[in-house]
Image (cartoon, rainbow, N blue to C red; front, side, top):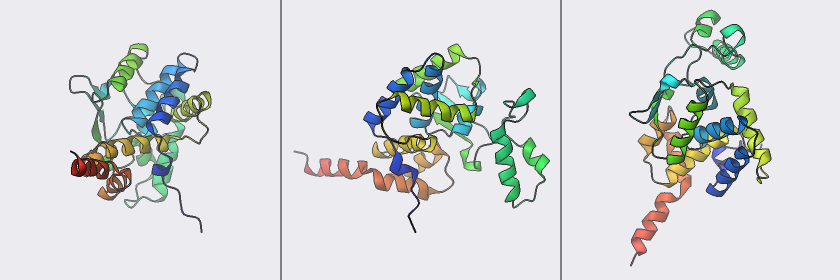
Length: 225
């Protein structure tokens, strides 16, 4: 039986990430702005595409430099301002495995909601000037985020096809890119867990373990003149 591939194996390195952004820049406006926005929020801040697609201007705390992901945000991205297809699918999936035995209408009323309770969090963004500028430019052009989950996937695919990259790139690989980079730079396990909204410390520990960043710094310190 083949081993299931984990997203961290598909994380982009710094050069590949820059090439993906170059590809996004080749797209026709405003698709180029949308793709750049999605890639930064996923590949640098580690946000899920469901969070990006449902992000509201009100989530962004400019004074604190945080994107505050709430426990619930009424979805109005579907037909006639109702639930989008993504939220309907998520609610039905939850309904099939719901330990609280809630009825489907109750679950539909709960969407949009983040993947887990741990995903309600505040995501810092001012540590990266490019991401800060992209966020500002996006909300100068759009009052609210007009893109769907499917559009997020499409823009990532379009940027990859417009780039020089010859590899599969998908939303969770970008989230893994952010996690791998922050782990490499030395972000500690509790902070990594909180930033990415993971339920278990073990997920953050996996990125710390495979990054090699701390080992590299320890060796440099050990053998420094």
